[in-house]
Length: 138
Length: 162
Image 1 (cartoon, one colour):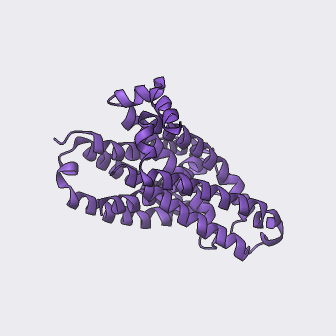
Image 2 (image 1 turned 90 degrees about the vertical axis):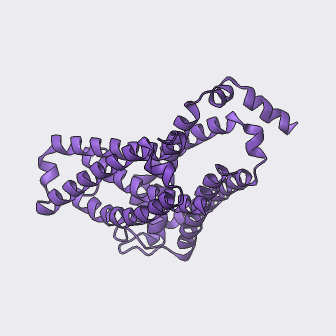
Image 3 (image 1 turned 135 degrees about the horizontal axis):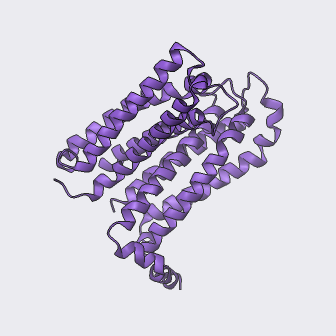
């Protein structure tokens, strides 16, 4: 059971991580430059939000199955903190983009900073997720 | 003979280092997970386009050109980190059917990709006109690829529980 839920969790992480990497790299200006930021956002953001719900459900199941492995694990809480920050950054990105489609093109320094910090956070989330298994409870 | 070969793999300096260190295995494994989610995620972008489910307004050729270099970069990282993890206990891994099945699935994924690139993708210019509707062969390649990669992730995760 746990391996199956973990597989669902990892495939969902693949969707969110790739979507966020595409968005962040476009924000920084490294990838996907043939499309506008608004177009890239419209392509990937819906997948991010929907899949995050799937991750919340599969993650909750994993916590219920082994509460001690997660809830008294410092790496788990590091992962959760990074996740909250990353979600806030994504919401800021989306809100500014909706208000003014050229916002991030006009604020290049902020775009590069936001993209880089967000990308590093998601990398940290994936890394911390794997490390949960290796840190002693408590 | 084959067992001897895997024993030699285990005895290599890197195999020994990954096996004996407390932090090397989880660190390499984390990089492996990061690489594989990018491989699988970026392949899914292409597969879902071929299935006409996502990015429908984009040209398949353009989308593939844009994303596949990232896929290959991540795949090389996954291959290197995976080989390092394997070398830490090569004999044990080759005795696990989930590991053997995962390797077979990787070969199947490569064959599926090869058939697509030598087949339907060669005439991409003819069917990639807006609004592009991939032919059955392309849809099939996308569907098979999607299925194979989910199985690969599942087998990979399963290996950790044996």
